Structures are given as C-alpha cells and as structure tokens.
Figure (tube, rainbow, N blue to C red):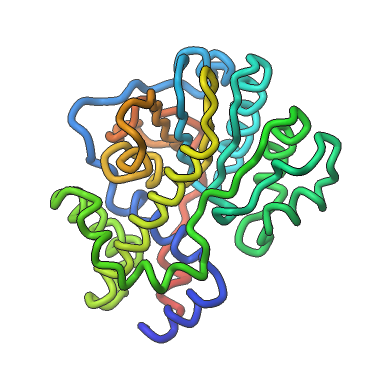
Amino acid sequence: MRFRWLASLRTSSRLLVVSFGAALWLAGCSMLPGAPSTVAADVPVARRIDALMPADVILLGEQHDAADHHRIEREAVEALVTQGKLAALAIEMAEEGSGTAKLPAGATEAQVQDALKWNDKAWGWDDYGPAIMVAVRAGVPVVGANLPLARIKDAMADVSLDAQLSDSGRETQQAAVRAGHCDLLPESQIGPMTRVQIARDRAMAQAIVKARQPGKTVLLISGAGHATKTIGVAQHLPTDLSIRSIQLQAGGAGKAKGYDAIWMTPALPDKDYCASLRKG
C-alpha cells in the first residue's frame, strides 16, 4: 500500500485533497466549542456575503464533488465583484506562484488555464472555471494558493511543521489524515502526511497575505478542511485580519464546528469515498 500510494503522489496531488475531504465526511468536524450559524439553502448568496462583511478574508470550504457548492462559489465571487470588494480570488486548485494578474480582462479561458497551470484531470474546469472567469472578467486577480507538488516531499520531512499547530490541533489533523485514508495508510506515514496538510494550509495563508488590499476581501476557495479556523488556513494568517470561515455542507444536520457559518445545500447521493483507496 505504501508504495502504491507514493506512486500516485508523484502523478497527482488530488489524492491528498480527496483524502482530507473524506476525513471530514468520515470523522466529522468537532473542532470549536459553540455552534456556528446555519444558513438555509434558499437564502440568496449575495445576502449571505453581506452578512459576513466587513472581512479581510473569507474562507469558503467546499465538498469537492458537490455541484451546488461550485455554483455558490461563482455567486460569491459575483457578489463581491458587484460590491467592488474583491481583492483577489485565491484557489486551492492551482499551485502557489501561478496566477492571472498579467492577463487582460478579456483573456480566453485557455489563456487563464495556462496562467494557472491548470490540471483538468485533478480539477474539472467545468466546476471551477465559471467562478474563476467572473473574477478575470472583472479585472480581479486569481491566484494559485496550493503547495506545489514539487515541494511535497520536502514538507513530509520538515519536522519544524509539527510546531505550527498546538498538540491537540496536530492530533486532530493526524486523526483526519488517518480517517481520510480509510485507515489504510501505514502509521509511519501519518506524521509526514500531517506535515503536508500543515504546509498546504500555510501556503494558502501566504498567498492570501500577498493578495491583500486595504478595504477589500480575499476570497479563498478550498476544501472544507482547510477552511476550519482551528487547524486550517486561519491558523497561519496574521491575527489582526478579520477572517470569516464558511463550510458548504451537502445535507446533514449542519452541526460541524470550527466555522463561523455553515451554508446548507441539498444532500448528495450516498457514496463510498473509501472504495477507490481499498481497490488501490
């Protein structure tokens, strides 16, 4: 199992994303004391954005395979653009260092994908392209925020990352990694994979800080695990920033903690997220 997993890591970082997302679905999200506010699916996204303002940063955490979440992301970008408040759109789906800042507002989708070094096999353009193109057409930069695949091996060995979270936070992250791999990952890999998640959160935070503009909001689109305030991106952001964390949740009771609000969407059909890993 270990060698098959490492081989897949060399070809795509999507496994890391799917695995951590699966951890949230499998293990739950009992992270912060106190319940976040729950917003019904029929509340207009523009009104939801208004309720979050003012904010330096909005962390919008999705379930990657939920079409309704991609629609909400597009509408969130539209709302911030309409208000003239969007400083930048940061995305987990492109690597840190890529971006559209040098492109004109009339750039083609192919040009945008090239600027973001888009991997359509890992992230479907049909899912994320609409939100991205709204920002581009408005002249707002889209910035890649994820840890580059080439730096994952170094992150796995970087023991200094262990100190980036509290002991309890690191234990929570380790439990998420373990559950996200359906308890199939060798125990010797739990620590290194936890460091990768921490490094990815830190990379996203750094991208957000670089994109800041006074009086405006940086919107990050990521998986829900990165959006939690207790162990995610927020842990690596300056403490003087106003941060709003949102979990997009498909079905369920909306009881997850670690977020300022939970935006509900209709439930998805049941799916065994561990099946592909068991077959691997």
